[in-house]
Length: 261
Image (cartoon, rainbow, N blue to C red; front, side):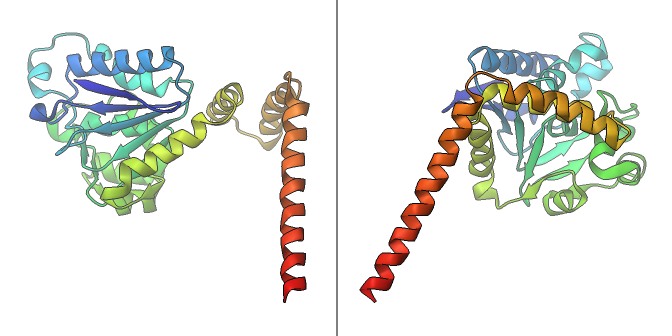
């Protein structure tokens, strides 16, 4: 129900139950949780979450709501596993995300959408209160007014509107969506893994900080840790030498062209 592709340093996890519109059944949620866990155990440095069309995720399985197979808490296992992943996560949303299905991109660090995407939280239409931290995550992206418009008033956003509202980072052409998401994941995975993980941890913690002074202290602790790591000076020295060499090469090329002209 979730296809996994391990690439160069990162994983692409694809919701793959199109016959059921990738609805968040207990089985799909468990499969997603298992796929995220396996990817992390394989040592990936980032995760891309995608979905087989025509729907990114249709939300909760209606049959399961009528006759529950497990407590509601268990149905959020997949979403919470990706939300709690220590590596950067990127959602590639190129089709409708509906109801609880909106939680999946909201659980990711970065959301890329295409014009074919829609974000349609319709919990109330089903007669159920939002769950999984939906209101909290949504309000952090689009503000309380945006969350109210989407959840209480039944508004919806397409990919371009989602990017403008802050729910998505960018809206990119459908044909480029997965490649653009993978490019972000690859770049994150290519950086120092411990440093990326610590920066993500600090970013999360900073959401609860209420003053500039506290933010400075939070980041200073992490920054002091980063410069005290073994190999830090060697890394900076190599970077400095590379920049100097590139500058010298540019200067030499400019001199050659002037002399030749």
